[in-house]
Length: 613
Image 1 (cartoon, one colour):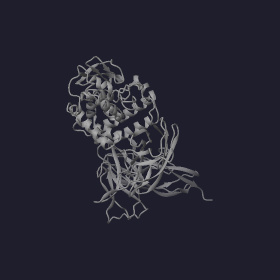
Image 2 (cartoon, helix red, strand yellow; image 1 turned 120 degrees about the horizontal axis):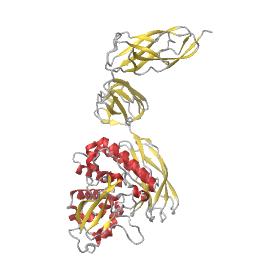
Image 3 (cartoon, rainbow, N blue to C red; image 1 turned 90 degrees about the vertical axis):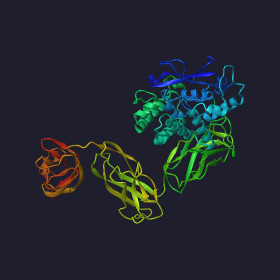
Image 4 (cartoon, helix red, strand yellow; image 1 turned 135 degrees about the horizontal axis):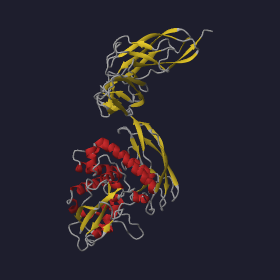
């Protein structure tokens, strides 16, 4: 029987609703109706109406969930349409159905409830060929389906391998999304933006697990989707984004949940026999590798069945059944009746071999039956293995191509002393070994014993390309391995060079002096503009706070010599304090007489003026 895929505009024309019309005049609405602006047929294939109608999940006592489960939580119309298209051996082409690619990134091809749906599908398939009615055409069995469409085949293979590996739904979605992306944009791999994708999926899970429903859940999901699309477009480029989103304007971002169905978002189906709600947890967010830590996770039994000791346990997730924390299951100590809570208190061992941060994620499992309920709110645990980040001083912006000093403080939490002879260094990250800041390595200033700290103070040169650039570092032992915690990544803005620009370097100013007295001071400034400062050009140091004040005897200090770009100059001069007692501000700035004040002001120093007693 012929299956026709139809689509029409939703979300103000920026996305499509999809649904299936069959050769016997039946329609699978897929959450959202069958009529709308720009209605068009986008694909066709041969399948079985009776088979698809069976596995939609509409059985006595159960609602018709269009195969996906809960709208907006387990999927949207595109996931439903793909489930109905299963017997036709095809999936929606995201480049012809606007917004489909974004929904694949959020829910996968068949929705996050795929395992439950596939069980119903399997039951329906057992009845084949009895469900193949008059007018059905083609072979809808087994591998014959997979050969109809290479994308369909690839997705099936991903599901088969991930089911065998017991992967969680997010891991499967990331793999699917990578495959779909590479198929429709061959020059682009999902690994290029897997970090953004996984962050979105985890954030989406948190929204769902917090219990939002209806318009509130829809608004939050749509806001999250738009924010993520902005990040994706920046990462993959406007042209790739335009191709995959199926929209003409590459700047458009759109929501996941159709506004007219927002009220249905997150509205659950009848409570299952086994269900669980996450309540609270206590998990440290920083650990030292190999050390043991006590944690706790509290869950509520929201199902209809009592959790029995020995049958129900808390199990590890991300990935499912992992032993990253030294164990994969936590036993109940007593039965838990419906409506009651249980707190699992257990010890974990911080992993030695994984890069930080490490995701701490758990979920209830009924052994030999299945996983169920909410997962705990994920915790990204920073696991330090050899070096711990303490602090850093990094400017938010620099003039492109100019130099400036930065500092990074690290602690040696290993059992060995860091030495130059052993080639312990600070190395650049994001990307690894980059020379964006003029160097990829910083030498140790001194040996660092276990438990001791070290401050790396070094000059960096801003990239010549105007824009934001990642600044991130990590300890390493050259030729052996990277070690310990990375510094937090800072986006430093490289600004266009200015004709006149100055940065403050240092100053020497007393905190107090006699009223009416004199003393020597100095102020050092750096020329970070493109023009050379000269006496003939009218460049001087001028008083501030307030501007052009003469409380220190003069309002200008002449240049001692010409100062070319990227050089610094020290103004050594004598100040004559006025005779008014009290605290008075000492502050200066560069000025080109008759043109403009420019650059950083010196830090304001309050100098105490007093008379001898």
